[in-house]
Amino acid sequence: MISLLSLNYLGIGQFSLVFSDGSEGLFDLNAYLANRQGSLLLRLGDDEYMARAFIEAGAMAWPNGLELAPQRILEMTKLIKRAA
Image 1 (cartoon, rainbow, N blue to C red):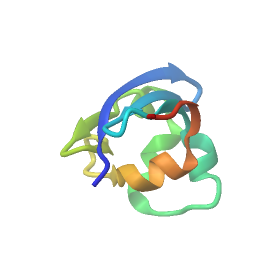
Image 2 (image 1 turned 30 degrees about the vertical axis):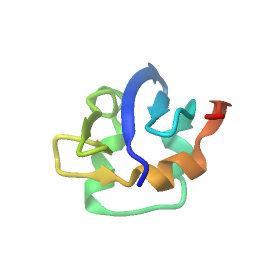
Image 3 (image 1 turned 60 degrees about the horizontal axis):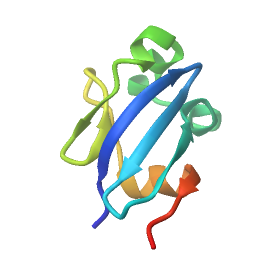
């Protein structure tokens, strides 16, 4: 099972991520949100709130209880480095 090990908010919805399989890349949260709706997602329209992301149990999370599954994030991440 894959998990998120580190994240760094780069601004304008872009995150630098490292996964437990050694993969690293850039995740565009704005692209993820483009075709999704929901009350927990509304706060992510604010860049300052978006930057409050943290890792909880290997998932990308925010203070409002929203968590994004690491496997789904990995599928949408533009990889810079993939584990050997």
